[in-house]
Image 1: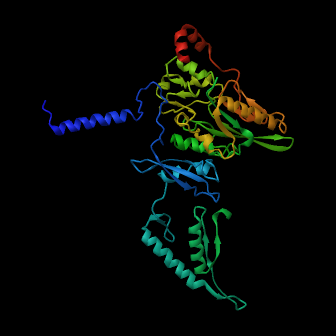
Image 2: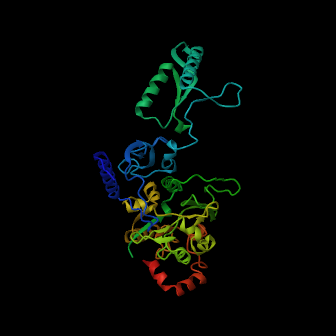
Image 3: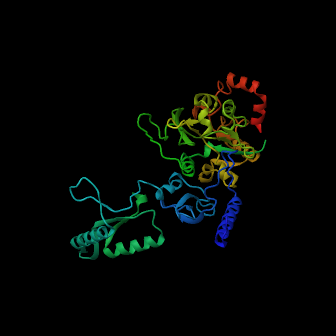
Length: 190
Length: 244
C-alpha cells in the first residue's frame, strides 16, 4: 500500500483523535451498569430566575455545547434566595423548554368559532393594537361626575405576570398608565 | 460501615413534591397518568411506578377530634444488606450491584429482565421496585449515582426547600438524625427513626410509622426466601463474589 503524505496526515489525525477520546474518561467497560457519565459534565452553565412566582429563585440552565439545547435545569446554590432549593414548579422548569405541548405560535379563536387557528405574530399584534385603540377611544373618561379631570379607561384591565422582571414591570406600568388604565393587577393576587 | 446515607426528616416535609419532580427531571422520565378522583387524596400519583422513583405519600388520620396529615417522601432505602440483590444474584450476576464507595444499590435494567419480578418485589421489605409491563424492565431510585460520584447531591436532596431531605456520609447523617430526634421528641413523644441500622435512607417520623405508609418500616414477613437461602448455601463462592 502506498501512503501519500495526505493519507499519512489523515491517519495520524485519526490516531490523535482516538487517543484524545480515550483520555476523556469514556469508560466503555460494561462492568458497572451505573458507571454513567454525568450528563452535565461538559455543559455550559447559565443562571436564570424562575418565572413561576414572585419569590424569584435562582436556577442554573445546563446547555449542551454541541447542540445548544438545554439539557438540565436545577437550583443555583449561590443564589441568596433559594440557595439551590426549588419547589415542584421550579424543579419542573426543564419542561418549559423541552415540551411537546408547548404553544409556540399565537392562536386565535374567531367570534362564534369552536376551534383555535394559528395566526402570525404580525397579525396578532396588529389586532391587539387595533382593539386596544378602539376600546380606549370609545370608553375614555375625561371628567368624572364631579367635573374633575381624571383621564382614565375603565373598560380595559391589565393582568401582569410573575415572570416579569423589574424593568419589564416598569415598561408595562408606564405604558398602561399612559393609556389611562386603572385596573393593573398581578396574577399572584388573583 | 462508611458510605453515604440519606436522612429524611418528615417533620420538616411540607409535601411540596419538589423532590418528586426534580427526580423525574434529572432522570428524564415521562409523566404518568394521575387522578385524585375516587380515592380522596392529594397524593399524586397513587403509587410508585416504573417512571416514578420518588413519591411523596399523603395520609390523613383523626386524632382527638383533630385531623393529622402526614407526608412520607417514599423511595428505595438502599439497604445495607439488600434482599433484592440476594434474589437477583440467584439468577443473573451483576443484575443488582452494590456500589462499594457509596453503598448505593443499583439496578441493571437489561439484566434484571431475567429475574422474576414477583420474587424481587416480594423480597423488598419496603415494596419499592416497579416493573414496566411493556419491556419487563425494573427500576427504582439509583441514589443519583452519576451526581454523587461527581460530588453533587442527589437531585431530591438538592431541590428540597425545607431541609427535610439530607444526604452525606453515613456517620454524619446518623448523628444528624439522632440530634434531630432528640429535639422533636420533646414535642412529639412518639417520634422515632425508622430502621436506621439496616438502611441508608433514614426516616424521622413523629408518630406510629404505619400511619405514614404501610411499608414505612420493614415488613417482618419478607426478606430472603427459602429458595434464595438454599441458593446461597449451595453457591458460597458466588455469594462471596457478590459481596465484592
